[in-house]
Amino acid sequence: MESTFSSPAEAALLREAGAAGVLTPLADLDRVYELERVAGFVRDLECQRVALQFPDQLLGDAGAVAARLEETTGSKMFILGDTAYGSCCVDVLGAEQAGAQALVHFGPACLSPPARPLPVAFVLGQRSVHLELCAKAFEAQNPDPKAPVVLLSEPACAHALEALATLLRPRYLDLLVSSPALPLPVGSCSPEPEPLERFGRRFPLAPGRCLEEYGAFYVGGSEASTDLDLDPDLSRLLLGWAPGQPFFTCCPDTGQTQDEGVRAGRLRARRHYLVERARDARVVGLLAGTLGVARHREALSHLRNLAQAAGKRSYVLALGRPTPPKLANFPEMDVFVLLACPLGALAPQPSGGFFRPVLAPCELEAACNPAWPPSGLAPYLTHYADLLPGSPFHVPLPPPDSELWDTPDVSLITGELRPPPVWKPSNDPGCLALTLRPQLELAESSPAASFLSSRSWQGLQPRLGQTPVTGAVSGRRGIAIAYEDEGGS
Image (cartoon, rainbow, N blue to C red; front, side, top):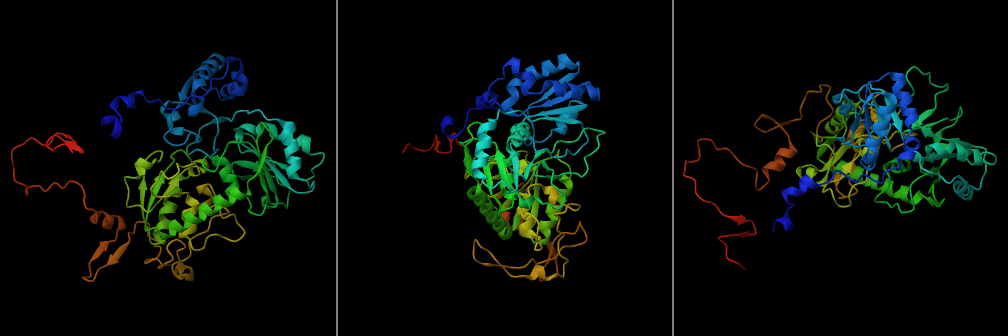
């Protein structure tokens, strides 16, 4: 019975943290992990303690890489193999616990600015790219040599984009090459004019040009990818790219291309559905999905103000990485909003795993702010920092007396008319929502408390002094489906 309905206790001790992946030959470590560049980074900073952060699939090489770097630099290396949230974010907290003076991040990265200043070096990897096949695929999908096109890639293929552009530039006149938005070295001067930074990449646009004029050619992924396991980096590009521009992906190994217009339409339709679910929701669960990305506290306060302005109750939940069993403990929530880095907010979710939808901050902004989306700006923002004051995409909430709050709205899911918010935003951040009772008593209005009161079982109640003292008696023995005092069926 134990193996049928639950796992034995020994299984938790024998469970592995994750697949370490294929080990890299020792002769290829210097090339794959760019150890010469990493050693120069450590020497320039004169660091004595350095943290090395690896994702699960690269942990098999962590020991060999750390030993090689310690031998080369003479500094002490600490391996960070487990992060509280996503492995794409810089684990500043883990580095501080180890007393590290710098951190080296290996593998895919969201390139989000850390919450605390710490010298960071990124090693994105160098995946092999068949340049000739990719060039032929580009020419087949872009017959017009004057059409503006941007070359994009997954982080591990970024090293080959300039070589690919060299093969294409003799024919194509308006070709733009993107590059990862890596942090500039300390003391270096930024180029003039500064390139546009979006989607974790830099775009050296010419004066007077905008990114919405360009189509996209993305090098990365594989032929076996489906909608369910779509890479979050590619999802970020498909959601934020101009809908009227073509978007093609190319496998770097075979040169096989695919038009992503249909998949992008499905992603946008999914986002529209999540916005509608957020508008129908009364109780919102805000999941703290990061503590190491800059401005996460400000973003959390912004989301709480959004929910309050729309007449919704919000609760902040710190659960680490969200999983279906964790979120199932909060059935009173109508939707969850994951406050994480751009890649963490769009990470693939198990089909049918979560009993409530998990949204990105942009969906809650579109659902609660009647002034959103602004005209001329991208309606699908993947980083919560783009929603905060100081960003060109920030849209402040309308004043309390604005007609936008009283605009009738009909739910596209239930078909019912949504009532306007029962109260307006308050200038006092510490003010709570109060409902006036007929007896002229003020009480806090909490849908979650109302939901709890309607449960058939509300938990154990102490009832101190109200229960008579009795002697202990033997209870039932066995498991719930077959107690010993019950006859066999």
